[in-house]
Length: 180
Image (cartoon, rainbow, N blue to C red):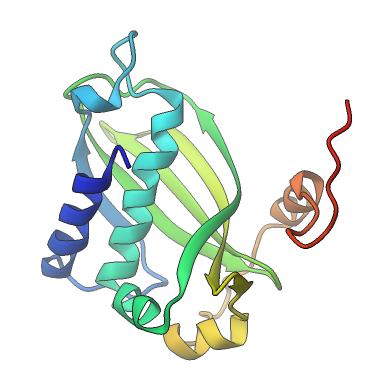
């Protein structure tokens, strides 16, 4: 909820930005605000993922997908994510959140997102996401019927398949005991 007002503003403002295809790259200009930083006066490591949510919303709104998803009752969820940091985005520093879909598999849509400042990548994340409806996943066939076919040459890197298999937890309807 800490970004609720910024999220609501973005959902409104992104409709007025130039339209994109869902397969394009969204570039969302931002500035590191006091609510984004920690005691070291740079964006907090946990805040990166919250800010990256805004980048995915921007792409979906500008591509016209967000409104169609909401009409169908579909909600986006993150199934897995990983991030690497290179430099710190400091208080008041302008940066952009670059967002693109890099591929799909049978269970997820994969995004690459970058925090870019001064022409350099400061952080990069990969996310496996799903769309759900009434607690069940929306199929790729249903999704592609809404967003159009996957562009030629868009193929998920092999290491992401391996990463996803290694970090996956059992499904929500399976038993997942806690044992240490």
